[in-house]
Length: 244
Image (cartoon, rainbow, N blue to C red; front, side, top):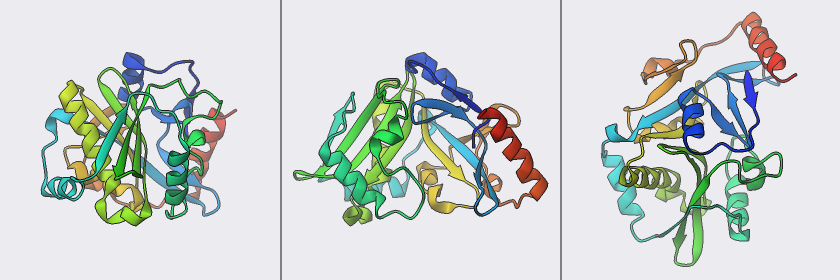
């Protein structure tokens, strides 16, 4: 659920940096800002915790080294302009049919709801085993920032942690280019499906909506809270007001 939604003809470079710094994130072609996920069917309200890493503070962990060793024989292709291929679509559909959480069933729908795919400066990483495409990572580039949009992989290669490997490759690229902040996406309190993003390390920051600033990540932020019916209605009213 989003309290603020904006449409732009272009969100690139320093303009994207500025929005990300203020706690906004991409949804399709738009830029949005919110703090909770509302599931009306379940009457459930879950806090969304947006993450950010200062790449200069990231250190190599044992888990990072293991993932790099596992994937050292795969071939990596980088492109500074993403164009969807049939191979991308097949890979994503295999991934989509394997996962057990809600997301969009089409790559183009993930990137665009208005038919335009060039509002953001979207780059991609493809990973191959021989000639077979086994993983795809899409991310938006600003001047000093990178925001991950989608990581998907062939379910037969789940053992290799390819989504995490893509994140490590993005961080490598950022360090080599002198870029500053990596936005891997968000966590959802009460839903551990997104917690893998913390494998990078506890050097993370998260956006504190109440104070409109980034603060150091602490485990306490992930403690589940059950909201009252009155609180649920309050957030629903905020959402409806922002989507008139």
